[in-house]
Length: 470
Image 1 (cartoon, rainbow, N blue to C red):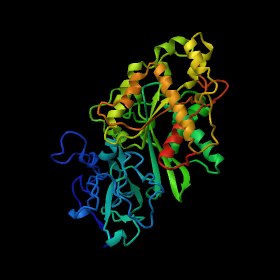
Image 2: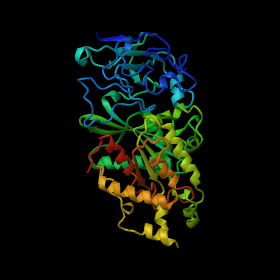
Image 3: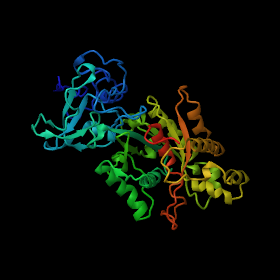
Image 4: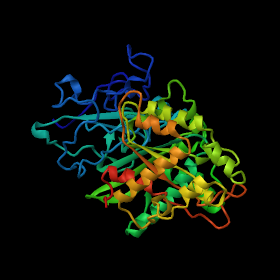
């Protein structure tokens, strides 16, 4: 038994040529065959053994169930290992490697998932493993290196079998939580990412763990696009450009290592998308298809989208996103994730704007925001790592009512009464990344005093059993 090399074939068979983003004959004009739903992420239907043999017991679409004795499943049915770029679960019986000896070439699969032309080292070797009786494998999977069938040199760097994105060294032996951020333009997604990662580091520091980036690309992207503008230059990060932009921040996901739990390493993956693209997504938005495979979607809502709020704070709110844009973007996000139906966290950003309403002549808002005992008026702090369920549910109910007062019923109704009748889990949050409005496109002179930025991430981590629930 042991390992055997997959036969060379077209783009739908593991072991095919580099790239291979073209659909197989008869696949139709939609997604490429290797990116169509119901497949295990590498072009072969999940649940079926290589070579056309009988299906694995269960035969369900989606990622194969864990069967390795040396790699136990996460406790409590937690997450499995997913690609940080396309969010496909890594197939158990397929492994792909990049050869750094052969010359780089255009990679059509990675280009489709990233939304722009990609030149990478060729992915020339994909192996499949044979099963023995009882699900025990004859040697460790996957191997640390394989021989490139072009140059015969060892290829040691694993890549995703679906999109060919480079994977960290221990990725298959880790648990991965993939979070997709969404929102209309100017809702503060980039601000939230920049501050939330810093807050996450402080939370882990209080637990005796140091936050680390899982990839060099993640660290470089965070330092250049988020950390340096916010914490060094003290200016607002640039708005997220379209994916086709050469130096777009979302070209590489943020991959954060959170230490270990149940003796398995934990990774948090954060992916951003341009609000302009989500408001008017292209017809074949393959680079946005990861929303359908996300574990959690965080949808950012700008309170300045309510014209009444903007009118009450003319000195602070210079321009906002109209209410129709927020509802439209959410509708597009729900459509992009209609098959996977991941939970949606609605995050009211720029909450410091609403806190200012206690000082304006608006009795309704003074009564709402002047309630000092409300959950949305206190922050559990960065030293609390466990997800506090009671506090979170109270906060969610308050923010739900807050959105109703802001005339955001179109946002609420899309989650409460979906047209397809298929409800999905939702939760509501209120955050302020800076704690105060920007001054001349820069950080307030008093500094950054974020508010409840970790709540959405604690909720996502708790759903994946990566933090405790109090």
